[in-house]
Length: 96
Image (cartoon, rainbow, N blue to C red; front, side, top):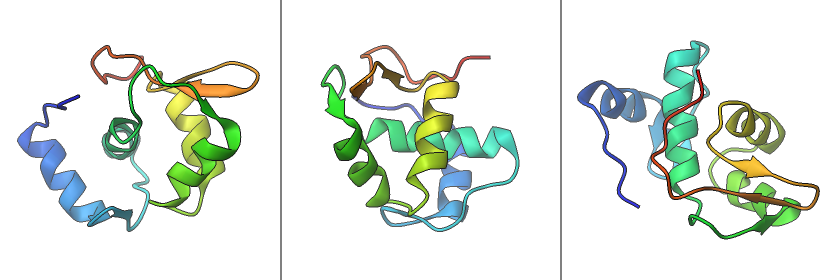
């Protein structure tokens, strides 16, 4: 899925990303959501991923998989059930 990035979002990504690695998690929620949106875009849509696989995917980009996993779910970038995480094909916009 192609994600449409605004100029501001691209600037945030340039500041907080180094290639495919998240250099630092932004303290401000608005900027943090940009990083979470980018991370969610790395997940193939509509494919259920086990908890362990989801952690490995996140850890390729940042070591704090627990925080990122929780925040991605809380902001609605991913969904979960007892055993899996997944992303819809709907646009990656956070819940308000």
